[in-house]
Length: 537
Image 1: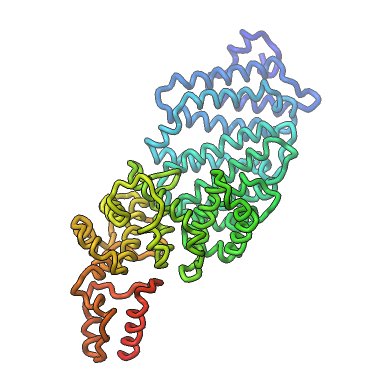
Image 2 (image 1 turned 180 degrees about the horizontal axis):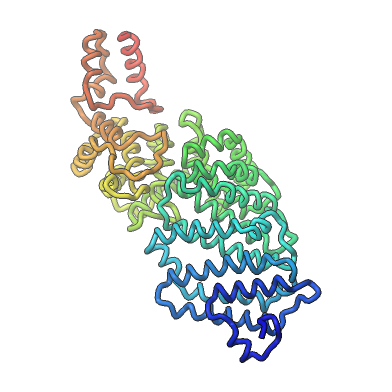
């Protein structure tokens, strides 16, 4: 009996193949013979659908979750590429009975603890990450992103698309990325960001806002991997995000996600440059005038969050000398930054409210080159839950906590250590804090032990150019804390005029002598230093 001919269920079932791929291929061939005029689910097709569902259910009998998920993804690929793509029988493939195949795939997937699988097997997470992008590259998925999907299939394709994006999103959090890992995916990512731009205000179909949000959340997550930012910039997501926050009629929920994306991009120097090249500072200030200032007294969580991200982005994309934000306007932000640093630094996983402690510390290093800001942070900032005896002591303790970062493979811990050294270097330029730093013996031992570590064992990571490396900053701290150091007495004494003396000082090896500083406390020293350089020419 032909598989395409009606027959009894018993006879038909005996003729059906036992393996899932063959069942899917045979169903594909049957559907190809169907026409729109004869496009109904007959008993033969119905039996195939039931057999496929049964085979999917049987996958739960397998012992290896990764094997089960491999088969599920392979089946999903066949379902999209070989079944849903058939155009001769739209009534069949849009039928809810036919689409039960997909529902069975998802119900079986739910029995797997994918989050645990990806967490415990990062290499497998990487495999699924790229395999999911392969699914997005299928012609039918590309048609969906280009708004060429049929109305009959649109809702179903939206659900499939969101599932695939969720695979990418959930795996990305467990992958240690390298700088070129997304290089071959730029066309896919660009297609995603262009879809958002075309559909960001589309309310004709109720499921589009969900799709848009899924894509934006993916870019938010990927941009959080700072090493990927240069590749993400190639997708023009920085330009699009700036464009979207400048739109008055776009939902604040979307603009909130855009601010998170912009912040993550700004954490990388190339991201900051891209935002500046796209007129980012003016667009952000316009956003402040339009959205933040009218709600400056609104302590709703959303506006508090937006104000924080606005200041963090602006701090990261402007040079310190250009960042002239009035201290009065920054007090609340500085309090929030200190809260994130203290609560994050005192937590087991070094995180607070979604931030790794390195993030607010990096922003603070850029702000604290200004005397008034540094003094506010160390003396006046409103803080809670501080266990250390002082703010300076807290920064010292936190540096000691991360002292082993150079020997680890955790790039965020290494960035935390680097940023802390830079903050403490800034602090050590101020005479009023010298004694407290010098009295902390554990801190001094840690600084001395790391002063000559040039980080040969560091994992590949990104460090902002406004910060110095650990060894340089550590030597800078030691230089400033040395009471016998000529660099400290130079502030109040005349610089020797002879070339011989100057040359002797220059030849001292492994010493850090210069830090670009916006500290007014160093003004006299800087004038004398310039005079000495001119006389030494």
